[in-house]
Length: 464
Image (tube, rainbow, N blue to C red; front, top):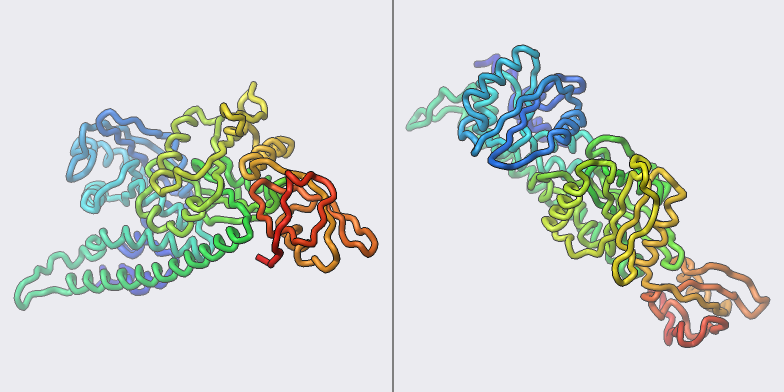
């Protein structure tokens, strides 16, 4: 038993790492796929449900696994002990032996007991869909906030699977005078996990407060926020880079981008806009991730406009589009105005860049390729119409004493042209959105062009 203990990793030491590898804490070895490691995928269809096997293959490859074989199974309901039944377990064991793999990945969520029973029967590591997605998130997390959120999700999952971490102590039964160290160790582990979860929640609460302060500041300055959402690998980060010039990591893989990124974009007629690149969605997004990533997902819920990026080169794009809508409803963002961006038309012969409008003439959908910079003016136009609600052009003269007001106009991106008229002040050509605040223009501003009915000057000019 001593050698078994030495072969295991202390959970106390494990909790000091960020993010936590919950498999290591349980067994003392890596549970998740390592780069180039062979894996067998198990696809189970329950009842009449249909699944996307190609998506699960992509998830496995994103985690670093090399898919060497796949097993198909169909059942009316899951087997309580092994999920797939005794016969399929035997077939899977033979398949593992034939290919000499070390990990088996299930395209379904398994209970802790099912996972334990399968590992015992197969003699291999077993990982379900949620565990695989959590591992990908752990690999992709780069920022402090992202690592905290992934660790919280992993700890919540680990707390239900602790019993497997000390199987070498299961022989010691409880009873008066016979209480073994196994039960004590489990209680200690649960307490340590509980303490760590409280610490992470406190830190994430500070992150939420910080993000909330940023959103309040943007609302006070009337800077709209546009959040880019969509199915994973739909081209969100590529579009974000093209719009903002940011160097966000973008690759043809699932969950290439995890940490949210904010950048400023100046739109003609609207002014400054904040663009947010968020984490991609996926079918059956694990509840642990939705709960842990609440601080990040609030950027989506509090946005003024959602850019829903859809990969139209995907044969199943309509289904993925509906799944994104379902996730948005799950996180409470289904009421946010949305502009759909149908991306990757360069892969679909016959499709051209265009804007589709609704019955009222408002932009509803933009067809483009995020790689084509000459398609971006269409998106800028649609964003301007969605956010600006109409633009009024005017020319005003500001005295030199109104330097603070001039600074505000520039900060909001409303100045199109400026000339200096000797000692009389600045002559400014402005593009004012319909929802612009009147107090951006001081009472000493003199309207030169634009018409009194189009622009109302303020009665006060205090700095917002």
